[in-house]
Image (tube, rainbow, N blue to C red; front, side, top):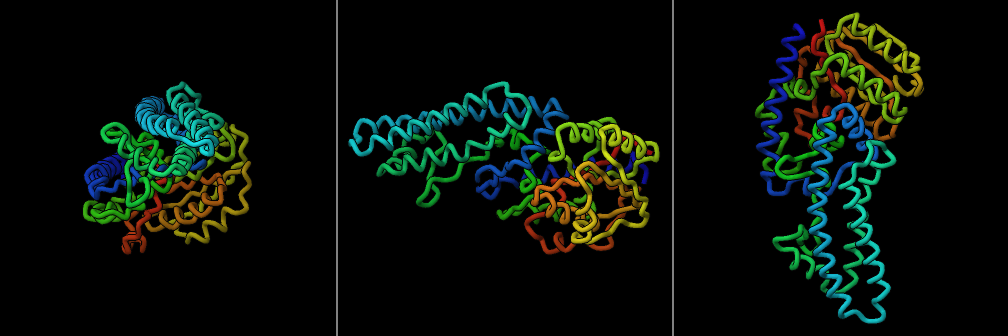
Length: 371
């Protein structure tokens, strides 16, 4: 298949996948994005790379976080109203709890100011985005020491703030990176768990996806079309940020010249490059992937060249790499395949409709303009 045809197929498959997501997500009435934030430190590194590579993502993220700051400010105003009522009726024994509550509220206020600031895209700053879950939890736990306070918070929130009960407890907050009507601010750089679906709703995202896409088309829909320059910038950026930012890459259908440019880019970044032309279909089990990458030092990268790959091989690769990712290890693997062939059968995770489909967080590329 020519690269131009592959690019067109990827675009068409991605469009169908996005249509399903837009139609299904939230239809169950219990949108995952309304059930706390999945952004961990590894995911934050991934988001930072996206901000550095894509100025539009940087702008959208900052604009969305400023919108979230308005929502969090409304929530804090409701907490403040309840705190004022508590202060008016507090006993001497409750003064320490009130002082602690005010301290947590100040941390909440400081966090809102951070969301509105022009913080630099650097991990030392962006790590603060992970603090809000603890700030909110500490505030509400402290408030819960006062009888009836959380009920008053929900009552005073109606129409103005987001607090509500789920059963007998306060419901978890919306994801910090979710805004209406645009959805996820992180886009293609969303956390791994979100990118891999993990849907338990009804209607179910994976079930609907299976109706709209074949297994091979679903695999295609997880690829990104990019220029060679953008791909090389991605490699350079990871190495400039540090070993913790390096993630494996899978690239389809590139020419010998493009392969040479990838090798030169890595070597210019001080990386020792091992290139292996392995031929064949590139099919390895998840455990074999783990074993083969275990001895690769952070200062090295391996380029593996195969004649072809398919959805099953990529699923197994993704499973092995996900186990490596969960150990916070970052092998410098670039897997190059001449083409993406049809899978002889669908992967068992697809056939068994398992909640998680493991391709979403992989860096899967088709280079536009390749030979």
